[in-house]
Image (tube, rainbow, N blue to C red; front, side):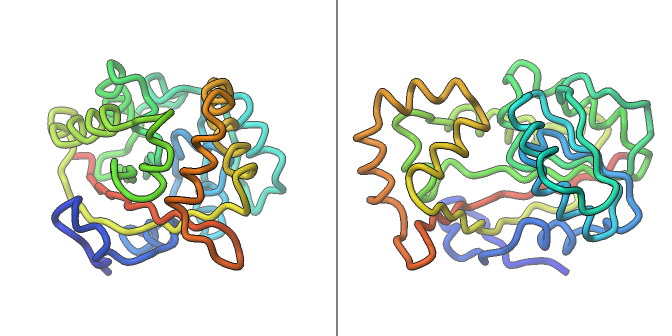
Length: 240
């Protein structure tokens, strides 16, 4: 089943608001598959895929993020290990699916090609690589841009995806959806952002008044919190 898609990043509003795990499941079978969730963060994707029958290993270089992931009760046999995308601690041809959810652009630009080569190495022939990347557009991006402008790194990640055939992949699909990000307040956003990258704390503190104003300017205030629709591009590729 293919979700609604857009062909131009300036027209992302025509895409559907979707749950990230539902999008993954709509594009590939996950039940019974061994999956590496690279850049797993707090483990929300790993847990969602485990609930759908997958055997997931979350990998992240950050101690704080791994602590958050491990602090949540397991929903199945998901596990979390410390590691980096450019040097995955797994054997050749040992997994069915590799997922990069909102994480490829966090790999140092000079190491992105190495990370994609590592994904190719650990995947079985015919295995799938699922990459979901936020566009440099939308309310959340523009809110955060004054202190965390990821325009260049997101573009570098997409450029690497476009030439990924050199790593032995075949493109299967490219599509878009909207993730409805929600925070109770500015403090929750700040706690989440600094957990992802503790180095952000100083920058946020230095521009707190400006960021608080931007938070309310770009966010959609509703009864259940402040919403920030974020357009996501998905690339699905097969190891050949």
